[in-house]
Image (cartoon, rainbow, N blue to C red; front, side, top):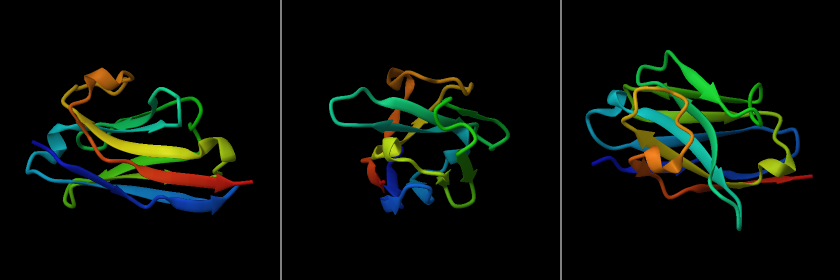
Length: 125
């Protein structure tokens, strides 16, 4: 069982930056591909990024490529999402997630085993 707890959300002006963190419980953190999704009101949960177990590979949605960076620190059981050049359309709840899938292009929420509670990001124009 893995528990995920996100932090770092908040209010930022357009063009600004935020770094989200996700702390995971358990002793097998490196065995999980970690990901971030986001979900706005009335919308489906949308894939943002994934990172492989030891951080050697990453994969991004086109909408965030070049602006967001996913990373992880396995010694701290933590995955991060650095978000730069934020825009109002990035406003939504961001969720950390973990999957046992051994590949990066894991786009369906059904393929993930564990989810955090979400953290709100609001970008003002």
